[in-house]
Every structure is written in structure tokens, then in C-alpha cells.
Amino acid sequence: MTDGPTSAVEDAPSTPVLTIDGPRATIRLNRPRHLNRLQAEDLGVLIALFDRIEADESLRVLVLTGTGRAFSAGYDLGSIGGAETSPAGGAGPSFEAVADRLEDLALPTICRINGGVYGGSTDLALACDFRIGIDTAEMFMPAARLGLHYYPNGIKRYVSRLGLDNAKRLFLTAEKIGAAEMLRIGYLTGMVAADALDTEVDRLAALLAGNAPVAMRGMKRAINEFARGTLDDAAARRRHQDSLVGPEIGEGMKSFAEKRRPKF
Image (cartoon, rainbow, N blue to C red; front, side, top):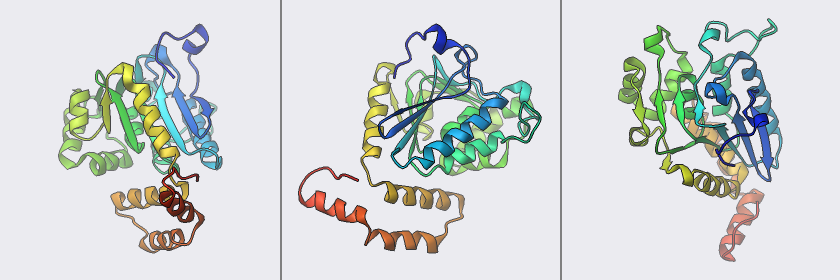
């Protein structure tokens, strides 16, 4: 997957696009002419794609990215205040609900940051488990400049992942920061040159896809709950005990003894 010149079809704005390649699913935000700005109709599509991916046991990892020169310009400013309503007038998912669903997706997720990350898309990226970005990426959260009190779960993600001081800096100053600073504060998991982005994302996706899926899903859930201060200790301990007698540990131990990669 590359970010070279798009064809006329690819460049046509659309709701997010899903592609599947073996154990890897990729969702591509696809409004390149508007820096992949998300619109109200995209929110329900994203929720449906997340549900579809999670229900497919053959899928082991999700990559979220954008078409063209930006990851995403965030949510359509003209729709702020109406994010709870679908274009048809019925109840639709809020932007907060989309980010929360992405955070809680059972399988591991990678945000492939191919350019700028602005507004609400900064929270979508934070909702992913890993964020690999190019060295010319930049981000900013303009809520204070717009007079918008951001939704609580987005603020919580900023604080739990980036720390109190960094969350205050990004939300209250609305200043733009570059890739090196994004890496320093922990917003980026990794930073690479643009021509190395696919190689690094592919490497990480393959690594995650090759690990024990049930163990990873359980540990991801525990880590997220712990970060939110909502850890279900009893459930986490049950998953731990189950793993000691489950099929994954049998294959893991056998492959380790045989000095080969496990086949989960």
C-alpha cells in the first residue's frame, strides 16, 4: 500500500474503504481532496467496519490510514453539534463512540500516519494501539481555539496515554507540533522516513498477526481497563488461568522447544 498519486477513482471522495489481505485488515479514510475529513455518514460506516473485522476470526490486525498526503483533518467542522444525528435524521453514532469502539476493538490496531493529524483524528489515532508516522507529520488539537469543550473520553485518552502536562499543553494551547515532538511525548510509537512507512507498518503488522490472538486480546483488554482505572481484576485473572491450560500455550511452548515460529 503506497501513498503515491491516486487514480481518478481512488481520488473520488467516499466513505472509508476496507481491504483485507490475509490476516490483516486495512481501513483507509478516503476524502483526499479534503485531507480525509470525516463526515457524519462516515461514522456509522466505521462502526460497521469495526464490527465486521472483529467478527472475522481469520483477521489478526487492523491498520487504519488515510489516502493521499494526510491522515485526516478530523471531523467536519460544519457538522459539529450534529454528530449524534445521521444524515437521514435518525440516531447515529457520535464521534466519541467511534473512537471508543476503535479503542476497545479486540484485535491489535496500528495507525499508519501518512501525514497531518488534526482535530478529532488525533483521538482516532490515540485510540489505536500503535501509531507509526512519517517524519514530516504534524498534529494539533484546535478545540480551545474553536470554543469547543472536547468530549470526556477523548480527554481521558490524551491524559492516560500522553500524561497530564502534555494533555494540557495540546488541548489548552492548541499549538501545532511536528513529528519529532510527537515521538518525544509518546504520541507516535515510531517515526520513519516516508519511503520507509510501509516497511515498518508491514513489519509490525506481521509481528502482531503472528502472536497468540486470544492472549493478545485478553491482555489488550486488561491494559485498556487498567489505563482507565476500570480493571476487572477477577476477569483478568480468569483469562490468565484459562491461558495456562489453553491450546495457545501448548503450541507456544512446543514451538519454543522446537525453535520454530508458533502457528496460532
